[in-house]
Length: 453
Ligand SMILES: Cc1cc2nc3c(=O)[nH]c(=O)nc-3n(C[C@H](O)[C@H](O)[C@H](O)COP(=O)(O)OP(=O)(O)OC[C@H]3O[C@@H](n4cnc5c(N)ncnc54)[C@H](O)[C@@H]3O)c2cc1C
Ligand SMILES: NC(=O)c1ccc[n+]([C@@H]2O[C@H](COP(=O)([O-])OP(=O)(O)OC[C@H]3O[C@@H](n4cnc5c(N)ncnc54)[C@H](O)[C@@H]3O)[C@@H](O)[C@H]2O)c1
Image: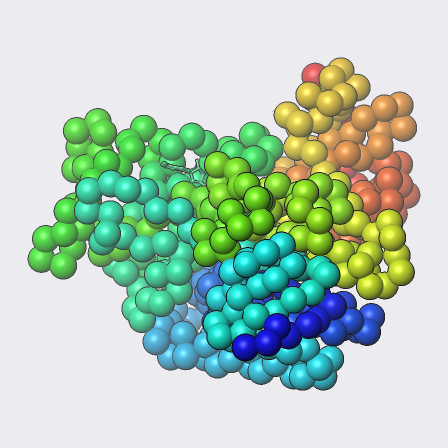
């Protein structure tokens, strides 16, 4: 078959690939998008979207318990799990449809196949061969799996999203984003959850905030085990018994989830054909302009060594398309001050540096402001869950280099403060902003004195 020529080939139809393809087409480029599965990639199909749906369901369950503390007399109901999964999947199908409409609107050629490099700017996709002066790799990542006896009986987050019922007892290995998010959801929806953490919770986050998250999760009924490493799983009569390296045999469990990080989807790409190497996590190292080192070949999103977040993939892809086709030769994503929220119970948010990172960069210049309080909604319900805010500042003008938040509502509060920090806000700027009363967020602009030390 004759080669088909385009201005741009995008490999992968997830967050980064779709954003790159649509932005390039809006600039007038002739674009091919190669994606074998449903559009939307990890975020839409087995990531942010179904996760947030489950988190909302978990919030509803918790709200019912708070309501009973307030004096509402009806008993908390149970989630119709399969019914909700159908509702969630129908919502996701609508997203697939809207992406397809976007591709049609911008006349992007969709090739439903796996892509493989023949040469740097020549790609095999099923029966077709595509050529273009520019190729963007946006193939994302997949969950790691530990190779231990019996772990074929475990699932990753992908398997969690396929569940049709709530497991009675769940063991989760890992202490990062996915482990704490799934632990919170499953606990709120009625599962007994034991978390097996190798190092500490949320290793890349502020130590104090991560410690407090552990305390809140424990109050929530999640058992966090830091001393036992799971070495094997045994399936008997439909339940799982585990072997701990300390000799104990935790269980029985109905479900074992591994949430131990992810690796780049590079194995299928035939990168040897273009002389492009990958790192230990099978990711492609890119520079600030998403360049791979092979002329005309770029990478964005989870397949790179950068932060694995949807807005990062989307904006890296858009900036790259602006640079290649939008007459903006210096366009690149600023990887500083990227806000992020862990949808744990309660949620944990961060923007900028954590205290440990700030001390490593600014040393004795670093000073802190902190606030801890029980939010009014929970004080009325006699449910002691704390909100904790922490500002990390430097210099005589107390410029804010980091903001950390833990507690109900911080997932929505953080975004606005992230704007202020990106603009270089100081503590005095926060003090000069009048509070919205009564809210939790107001505590961020009414914080008192510097914390000594
Ligand atoms: C459980 C979970 C929850 C998450 N929650 C959040 C969240 O709340 N907020 C957030 O910001 N981020 C979240 N993330 C991370 C987010 O999903 C990713 O950062 C984002 O999806 C990365 O987008 P991407 O375009 O790089 O890759 P992907 O979205 O993974 O897309 C890659 C696409 O490439 C395709 N592909 C792979 N190989 C080939 C090939 N050879 N040829 C053609 N196509 C190929 C795949 O089929 C896939 O569709 C979560 C991730 C997980 C796993
Ligand atoms: N809310 C969000 O924005 C969100 C949610 C989910 C995922 N994500 C993205 O997806 C990425 C992947 O999430 P993740 O939770 O898989 O990774 P992660 O890097 O956040 O956490 C991995 C965890 O696995 C542990 N681990 C690694 N190897 C292990 C081993 N051999 N035995 C026991 N524990 C081991 C680590 O100590 C760590 O606690 C995240 O880093 C994040 O960028 C974002």
